[in-house]
Length: 140
Image (cartoon, rainbow, N blue to C red; front, side):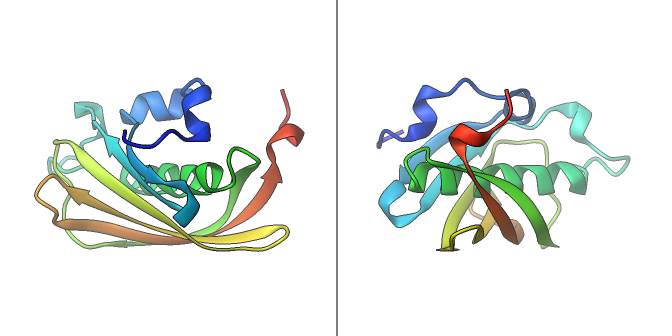
């Protein structure tokens, strides 16, 4: 990663570890982040592609960190709704998520993400509305 972000100080949650999540690059001031994912064979459906729920989870786990890094760790996101378009089958190979903060209000934000393979083929895209939760108000 070329830029330090608020994410650097947090332990990876179990869901991020499961997805093989790793920050590759970030421009926090711009609300942009690039995340690498290392999918597991257990993610494959009977056709041999990554099951769509895992693809959606990768997109979700790209958008939330974009907000967290953009707000310097002040805001956590809880997804209100998310729309996913599946554009091409995702294969068992390293994948890249790019997230972008579109707009943040007082309690709701709007974010987008795309997931590509290493060659840059768009596999899926998502847009989401998120509830903005002050980090210090998280339970536990």
